[in-house]
Length: 583
Image (cartoon, rainbow, N blue to C red; front, side, top):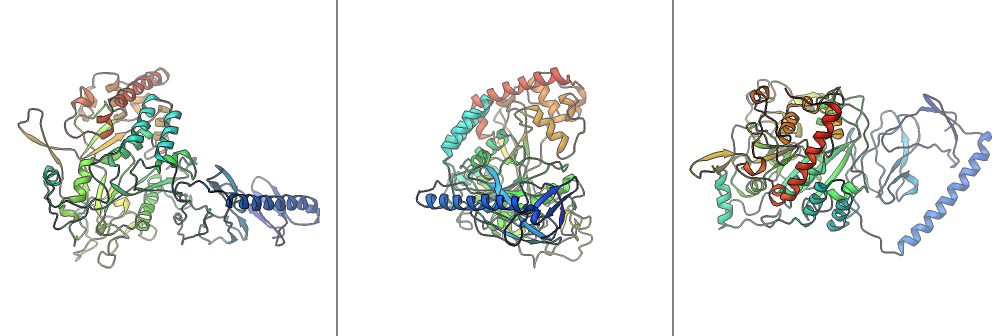
């Protein structure tokens, strides 16, 4: 490359270096908008120095490789490497990547695998990784073929997380996860034909148990985006679903929904990733984290980015062997079906799971009990309506696309984004798809945004007087369970529906759910305005919840107490700085 220039910038953990055809580096001078490189005799001295350093580094790497081959190397956690968007110029590009062994960004030529190629403005993203395998890449997707096999032990990583925990509640949480081992079900258990327990469980949800039809438990594949979610939310979810998910697919982006850059929490080799993949979701559950690299040129709004991130969930499910007979769940980290209902979904005769679905109304929509910030602050009347569950036969890329023809969507020539009106956005809204009897398959965005259920499944629970029964919740929402309110305010400033003055207003003014939690933990009276919106809290807290309770909360009163005390201290400190809201 002689006398060429390129725009300089920074995309994720990516660097760039230029070389001449004979291996000498060029001298590069970076101005505000361009980086010009000159390969001439005036650079010979510097080039010679660089060449000598380069040769020395190669010799050292060879020596290290030889020494390493003589030693039994430790095993590493499964790592998924994200795509780095290449520079859009005609030049030789050297990619940098995150080195999971050393925990630093290093040039690709310092690792096991080096990949360079001439890029053009039309090139798709490529991956540099520590294993020589690549898959076909689409824009905004990541490559999932690289895996470094398991694993630092669960005990070791939970011990470390507990030692470094900044609060007592987090320490108790990690200690609980370290020893948590339910014995009521497994992703690989056969269905026992004469099981009274399974029969009673199905009856609790108005379902039948028929082991002659279903000999093995249905497998469950779960997917979510992940970002600054608290370990409180992650931990309580993992405890509830321990051993029941076949695959966990988590997507982390390099930007917020407002397109501001963010540092990856679960980068390859990070302690956070080690903890996720240590076995807290189950000893045989495959936990996959992939990185989404935002393409700023095609994202029209914040929610659109979330839709694109969730698209990658399907890719991971498919790679991990999902079939038409498996269950897919799309949710946020802080939403989970109760353990009892997950077990019921695996074995009961669920009408929406029977073979031959037309896929018009395939969803199981939860009735969800809401815990707001603390295990002791529960919404009295209002219920949430996520997570959502669909059988594989009706999930896009898993079900049969030749039978279930595609519909029109918002973007990308009708292939991505929300369903359009007339194409199934609402339950009765197929006006532009007339004369069809087999309806379109469901993408992750549809799990969250499209109507798709005409049947309610609830757990029938005895009231406290033991005389009558009511239709209860089948899921939990652990909302706003942050470790500090700076993180909480950051969420409301940069995610979903952003609040520009999130760092200037009283805590309760941010959002009505937070206001309810503040009133709850401070034992304040619910205002008339809040009561009119059904934002009252359960008096007496956790002990007065009717129906099923989260496993972590029920089995660790020490955790509940510590978390609630910490939350109260956080509210007191926050109100001193930002004031009190009481409307």
